[in-house]
Amino acid sequence: MLEVKGLSKIYPARRGSPAVTALDDVSFTIAANSAFGVVGESGSGKTTLTRCLIGLEQPSHGEMLFEGRDIARLKPSEMREMRARIQIVFQDPYASLNPRMSAQDIIGEPLLIHHDRLQLSARARTDRVVELLERVGLGVRHLHRYPHEFSGGQRQRIGIARALAVKPDMLILDEPTSALDVSVQAQILNLLVELQDSLKLSYLFISHDLGVVRYICDRALLLLHGRVIEEGPVDQVFDHPQSDYARRLIAAIPDVDPTQSLHLAR
Amino acid sequence: MALLSIENLHLSIPSFEGEAQILNGVDLSVERGQICGLVGETGCGKSLTGLSVSKLVASPPARYRQGAIRFDGQDILGLSEGAMRALRGRRIGMIFQDPTTNLNPLFRIGEQMVDVALHSMGANRWSRSALSEARARAIAMLERVGIQDAHNRLDDYPHQFSGGMRQRVLIAMALIGRPDLLIADEPTTALDVSVQAQILQLLFDIVREDNIAVLLITHNLGVVARLCTHVAVMYAGRIIERGTMADVFNQPSHPYTRALLNAVPTQKTRKGTLQGLGGSVPDPYLPHPGCRFAPRCAIAEARCRDAVPSETDLGHAHAVACIKAGDPA
Image (cartoon, rainbow over all chains, first blue to last red; front, side, top):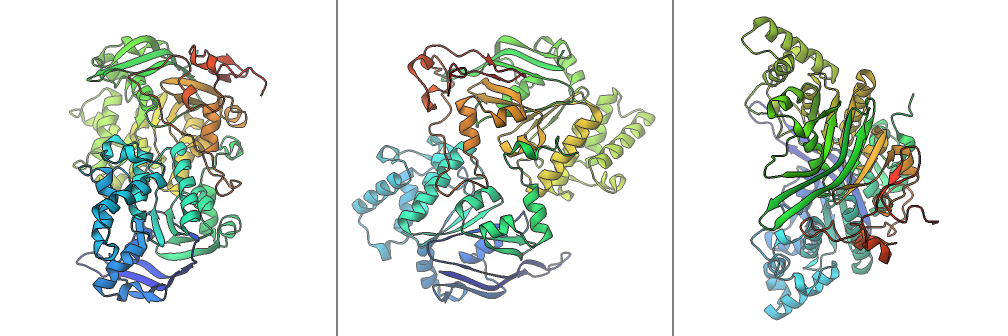
């Protein structure tokens, strides 16, 4: 579905600051209907990667082939079409919903933006919004509510419904649960698993929570300073990492396991 | 006697919608050498419990209707603001979640640390000798929290430090007065996992070397498993289960504790089998009778809605507030 080959992004040197290589020869493939995890610490290039994929940055080198066509070389009109195929869910459900728009307006906005392709009447748009609300576990009664009337988990459901509105094939999920409580995170993760199954979606799942990546994803890659350190099926990456960095990172994750207690280490 | 003991603490805050019942009988004690994790969902009262210990909840408008907080035998709630200022920073240290907003961006790190050091020494800036002593303490403390080249870095501004380094500076600041009790509210939430691991190790070493008591407020159960000796699980303003970390994690006895532990994906969790916890924390304005968790509880019965369950002692300081705790499973 998506094939990234030798992707690099270099921010050129400016007065006083040297050039920054944010992505360095990154390659990976995401198969249709699979979930692919991207793991890395701050500054590892996760955000630059997503910005390139949705066309907010031009890569310096390399290709990003979505069904064989390079995203970076699309004409603006083709890019609009592409954006309907790849949608994004943001990290912070408190910041990514406009507080002055109702749930109906938020979820319906992509339908308006892509109106020339979708050709939905106002009535059909409302029906679609209601269908989406029900899809993500909300309902008609939430149609006219505003973001402040929703809890964090419900807001993230609205963010997911908005991303699903234009029937994309792929979702980029940028830390979709890191702002949520574990109890709510579990609900959202299960919703994502269920949606992937029923809508045959592909996910690019960005996270620093390896437990979550392992739960959701089939394959994962680990970034460090813009380079791919590990890539493979999640079991292999997490259970048999090849690099020292990966081993150290995995050891640093606090598991909910009393035997990991520092008080037991002597 | 425990260094910190909170007894039956009730806190309510009036607002336009009525009186919000924030804390409803918190019982908790922390001794020297213990790291007590206070866990629970957003809005259950964890942070306000921590702020109450250092008396940082403005009262009025907040009201402590019942209960007491005893720190080394003194009743915190009865102390004047002046007496409290003498405790804060000297005997009670605090670390908050966000290292970017808790340092003043306009002042050099050294200046901010020296201020705290002088306060803990009971001195002011006009004394040359006190000033150089405070500076020496600041350098020693920064070195202790792992900041290299500390005496040069004192003249740097907060933006010249990374997030992890800023959190180290805040920890150094909290420890500079050699407190007996440290309250850490989500100290690693904003940090990367490898930096988090270093900060947890640092807190662990400090507790072991200085024999201080720590109240660690977090929603990350992995952090609790790694660092804490004890854990208290909070729900709707009450501690619903407490005990040693190993007891609570190995034999969680309250359905809420079990639900929280089951919601975290681990190595063994198969895709699609994660158990979420439906519903949300109860409305603090309209407390319903009986167990506050009953509406979300998988095993609740009619009798759960009659009265607030009292604590059942399970032995080894493991206690649970659930009327079904004694029942055969």
